[in-house]
Amino acid sequence: MKQLLVATLVPMLCLFYNSVQANVSPNPSYLIVTAASNPNTAYLGVYQGTLPCTDCQGIVMELTLKENGKSKSKTFVLKQKYLGKPAAQSVYTVTGKWFLATGNKQNPKARILQLIPDGKEDLLYFELLKDGSIKMLDNRQNQLKSKHNYTLKKQRT
Image (cartoon, rainbow, N blue to C red; front, top):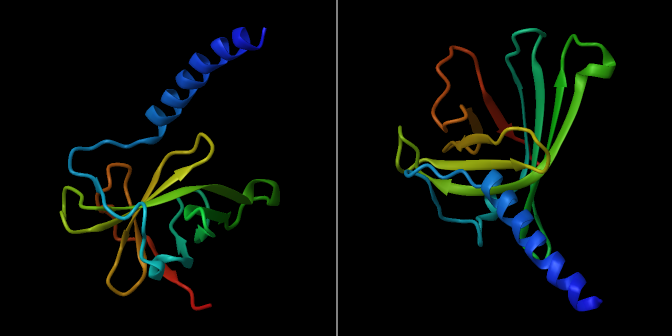
C-alpha cells in the first residue's frame, strides 16, 4: 500500500514542481542571474518611497529585503498603501523571494533586483542605482518612460 502511495505521489509532485518553476522563472535571453547564491549584504534593508497612481493620490511603498539565517534564502516583504482610498482597499502586502541579476536590453551592466511573489501577483523589477536607491522597471525590465518618480530610497537602520 505504501509503495502504491509513493508511486502515485512522486509523479504528481514532479509535475507540481515543474509547473511552479515554469511560472516563476523569467527567461529573457539577456538576463543572467549572477548573485543568487551569495548576494552582497549591502542590498539588504528597507527601501521607501511614494510612487505615482492613476486613481489615487500616490502609493507609499516599503520594500524590505532579507537574507534568512543559515539557509541564505532571500525573501522580501512589500507593503503598499494607496493614498486616498477607503481603508479596506488601501493597504496590500506581498511576500516572496528576490534575486539579483545582471543586465537588461538598455544596459548590459545594470544590476536588476527581481521580486518573485509567493502569490499570483506579477513579478516586479527594480534597477539598483549607484546612490543605493532602487528604481522600478516595467515588466520587461526596461526603464519606465514617464516624468514621474519611481524611485525607492534605502532607509538607514
